[in-house]
Length: 151
Image (cartoon, rainbow, N blue to C red; front, side, top):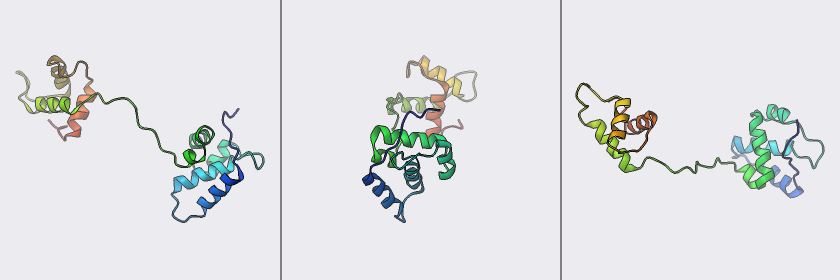
């Protein structure tokens, strides 16, 4: 299997990694990523395969692949300080919408019902145009967030 990304550490980068590995207070995940980079370095000879690196570092192959990719695309700092980017999708539910859903959930259920169900709330939210389209799951999350999941 061809690897899309490769690691070729400079002498300075290798020294930086070794210096990090000698620190006592280094987190386990950072230590594993540093070892992954050292084991996949092509500048000192033939690197190990990703499966072998994963076994040796006690990580998943995807972690090895992601670390190598981060190094290739963004450099040593990004590969060592790996943090997932947060979703860039804007939140659909605003505080005002949440307040309206909660107020509706705390009100009397319609005639013929003894209490609100999530489906019934969802239908009423759409009917009252609090939300144009909303899934049952979104309404459930709003209720759970405010500890109203047992209506």
